[in-house]
Length: 131
Image (cartoon, rainbow, N blue to C red; front, side, top):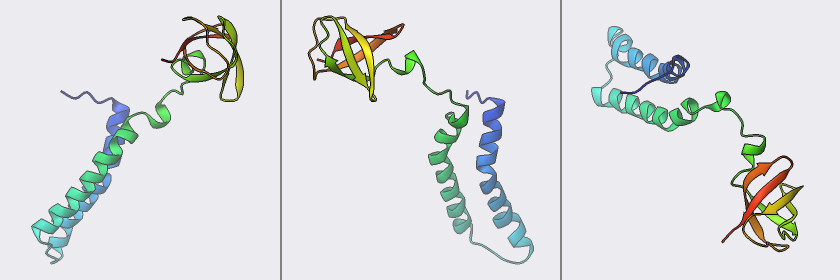
């Protein structure tokens, strides 16, 4: 069974508001004033609106403004850095234009090599050679 948080339920209802309004208009209001829309045309319009929602919903319900930014040390883990001073085992790497003290945990990494950050200890990143 799906579990939807109260905040996400409100987002989902807001996302579906156009289908509700268009459905009421096509299937209830227009027939009352004498305008007949073929059933297939009304269903086609509703299907297109629902398809739009299925494409948009993951972005709207997936976090958006509520999603916490990945910052700090945990934001570095898994990223790739460039060795600018040989890591034997300690040296310097460059990531996003910034220089970081680094320690290579699996041997020596030479200048120009790319390494993967696996952990952060204080102001030093712990890296492993990409292989």
